[in-house]
Amino acid sequence: MSMAEATESYSAKSGQERPGEPDGLRLRGVSKAFPSVKALDGVDLDVAAGSVHALVGHNGCGKSTLVKVLAGFHGPDAGEGTIDGQELLLGSAADAEQAGLRFVHQELGLVPELGAVDNVGFVLGHEKGRSGAISWRRQARKTEELLARFGIDLDPMTPLAEATPVERTAVAIVRAVAGWSKGRGLLVLDEPTAALPAREVDELFRLIRDVAGSGTAVLLISHRLDEVMQVCDHVTVMRSGRVIWDGSTKESSVRDLARLIAGAENLELEAVERPPIPADAPEVLRIENLHGEFLRGVDITVRRGEIVGVAGLLGSGREELPYIVAGAKGAAAGGSVSVEGTPLVAGSVIEAMSKGVALVPADRAREGVFAPFTVRENVTIANLPRLRGSLGVAPSADRDSAHRWLESVHADPGVAERPITTLSGGNQQKAVIARWLSVDPKVLTLSEPTAGIDIGARTTIYEELQARADEGLAVLMSSSDAEDLLAVCDRVIVLRAGEIVAEIERSQLTKKGIVIAMEGEHGE
Image (tube, rainbow, N blue to C red; front, side, top):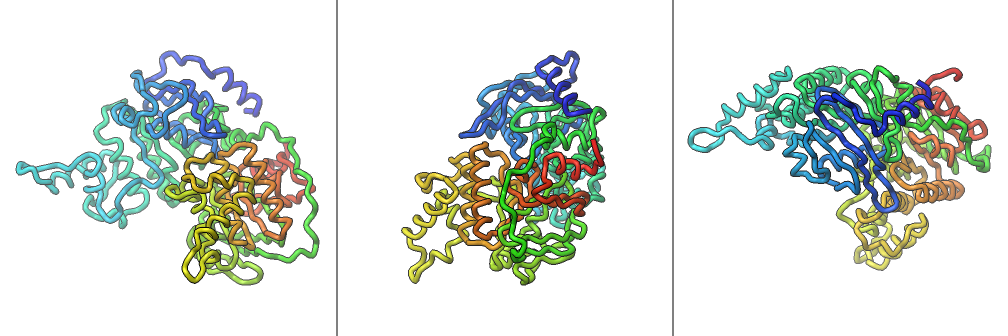
């Protein structure tokens, strides 16, 4: 399936009816805009009852917004939906609940100190005896029966902290689908394998197939394309708020999906001109033989004033590299990281920060911003020790610092006292970057720095990274968007299966070269 064939195939099907389609979820023309960003742009989606349907795309493509519309967290600007042939009031949490839509998020929403008996009871209600008090015997029996339906043998009284990751995920799924009638509703699973060791993924897939086998429509949100091909019947690819391809997994491959997600139909883009790094520029960051969940012995150096990009398909190790370097992903399984010759203590954010390493994380909403706080507080929170005087942090110093750093990233200082959640995604990202620039780091690591933001904010971020690099900052940037890498990087490291398979200097840097190296092709 070529890129052109994929696009034409979707365009030909888009908007057409599917006569005889089994019950399940049906969405038509769903749109949702936020300030400066159109998160969803006329999305059509069909998830048949009894099927496992994947929704894939890079961060910021619209997947999360679509799920939030289904859950009733966001109301759509346009669009309509049905579930099992009945109208679904999009944007209504109550209607979603009544219609049989259930969601299992990556965090699972479980209380690990308690057993399955309570975690199930909190949602479905506890069994009671004649006196009206909870009957723990009945509740335990009910929980065991629910788990046994899907082949899970787990003591319902044992705290879930002692259970395996797949057992905890199973409890969340069983709790979500319990009580459904056959063929009714939709189960949405958001990155269910993210916290699972590889040996337990197959067990979870068996559970997912059992759920679908009972007649439930299953929508699986996943970054792991090999797993999508393994467990799913159908896949929908999103990019920039739109559905760009929709079809059977039998009609596609991991390589096809990766190209669609990356926008690889336009492979002729080349790197933007940038002066070369001086040959005698000193080394700032050294990564040696680094191992992690996916990484398998990676060696990288970043010199003063250099921007090094990291590319790779999902599961290549690209996603975890910035986090391990910044101490935010636990101790590495092996290897070392040093800054200006000083080794860092693995798995310690405080240690990394003290040695001059800062991290701009991939998930802005969950990892980047402090939602209850103002823009000012979000910008200055990492720099408070420098602003503290003998009587604490002076309000004027706090305000002046926030204004100065907001101006440095071309954000309006007038928004400083607004809650950060009222800003567009692009301006939130500028505030996060301003926060970490304010601590004057030696190394700035970034993961997906432009996910879900408009072109204007992207350009500003590119310019700011280049300006800071020109002042001597060492930058390590991981991105699934080849255009990010082309815009700012002096060279790009390409990972595949946890190992470096290519290192492309700026003079040779093209989108085609990046994509081919990521996929392991040796020509077109």
